[in-house]
Length: 142
Image 1 (cartoon, one colour):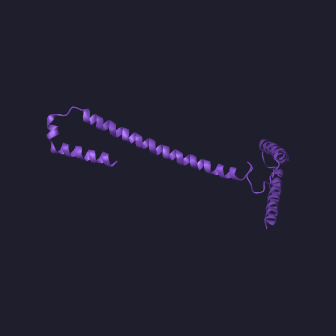
Image 2: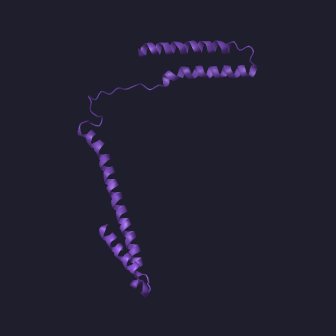
Image 3: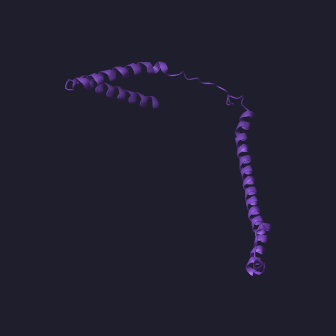
């Protein structure tokens, strides 16, 4: 099926190329400068076409019997698992560092509040006492 399709496709390409070449060759009504540019472009295309098959690398097939080229077996499994382990360790490390940064930020805020000068009326204010109680229970629950 694919061979037939590729033959049909190449035949259509060949037919189109022949019609295009005939049309370009019959360009008597074109100005001289355009005709010369087309001639030079055709020569360059033909030169590239001749070089193209020589520049294609050879295909190499290596039969390894289903094993990886590194030696197969357990190396393949280790090579597949190591990046996963590195990802998990990295995510855990990032989580720990973020938690420590949050705790340090809260400690700095608490220290600034506790060492700041407060007027004596603040200690008798029921709202401030409630604030201290809720702040203490929030930090204890974390």
